Image 1 (cartoon, one colour):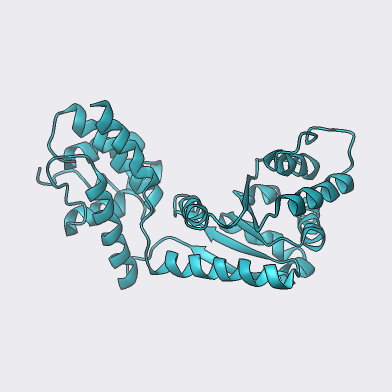
Image 2 (cartoon, one colour):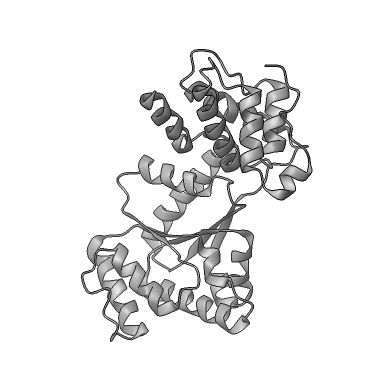
Length: 287
């Protein structure tokens, strides 16, 4: 059973490509290639709701382009600019990253040196909304100014990923906004969008096939797909979490496939208050 549970855990790493992700992949690749030629110092954004697939997309992009040297840095919450520059150096493997005597300017210049030494092609600042989780406009302006200076000095393309409030960094600094090459948006699927529904069914089909059950779970079956659409708030990350927990329950119950009753139990355990207020979409479904 341990093997099956390991397979269930692996579904969170399954990347399901669609027209949107394919376009985003190509656009990001083109951006990196053009910036390597111009070295003007610019950035792009990947904006989307929590659970929309931003991090999975980045992981897939990195794995599919091994010839590129990509530095990925998670932006910690409530982090000072100096502390974050130290975090960048730490991720670059610099042994002196914790030197507290260095000024912000010195750290920034050291970043430039190490980036050039390592031949970094792209910097990804993940969870970048943490830069602006404050009501103080002065702090947001300082972050925007630091980013602008980093673009000027490092000459390495930067991708900022995060929630929609990340956009406030650019509204606070006109010079930085002029350096923005574009936004990739992974927003919630809209139920009236035919392409979104098609992508959702394809996503569920791939995940269903990845589950280690003897029987077919048929997650893309219309009623089941609609229930998962509602139960996960139309977010793939939340759907994966729901399916993963339900699969564990089905295995413990020695079921041959992922059952509606297991999804119902998982929904009760994992759904947030708003999702629960809409009712359990898996109740009453045929086993």
